Amino acid sequence: MALERIRLLCLDVDGVLTDGGISIDDAGHEQKRFHVRDGAALRMWSRLGLEIAVITGRNGMALRHRLRELGVRHVISGSKEKGGAFEGLLGELGMAADDAAMIGDDLPDLPILRRCGLPIAVRDASQEVLDVARFVTPRPGGSGAVRDAVEHILKSQGRWTDAVRVFDPGFVATARPGRAGAEP
Image 1 (cartoon, rainbow, N blue to C red):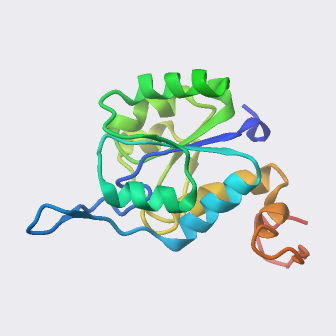
Image 2 (cartoon, rainbow, N blue to C red; image 1 turned 90 degrees about the vertical axis):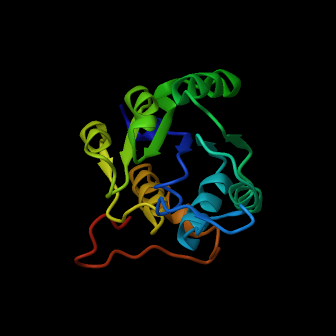
Image 3 (cartoon, helix red, strand yellow; image 1 turned 120 degrees about the vertical axis):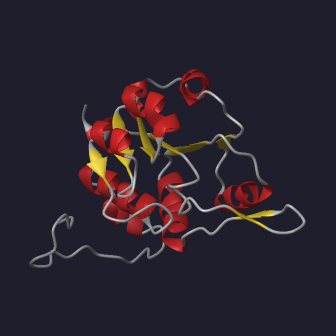
């Protein structure tokens, strides 16, 4: 599978966009902590005309607020069977599984990871997820792992300079000695 085909980025939430911890206050309100670099990466991805989908087994307003802020349109929450949710999403978007990457960390993500074109594991994922991954992020979930994955894909597609220009229109890529993965 060529990375050039990837047009859809699917994400789990707990353990990928967050560190996997769940904070619940005395009133029962859930709080989540998100990494700002992951948000910037998702903005770059969508501004390049690419699709983002979140498929999670949990429901929560903290997540909905953050995804709305980032402009994520495809949110499937409360999913008990992620594989079926993924197939439905592909049908809705008119895409093939090979057009999608999935970033996961634990066993419920395996059906999508086994089916998608580019299975990605966060560094601290379960061994079963690491075993099927074709890319493992240098950082753990909730610490910029989504940014690592987006950067890997966009550099492989030769689109990293365009992605950086989302934030800095005057950006000019320069090759730096010793910088692996730098776009020429």
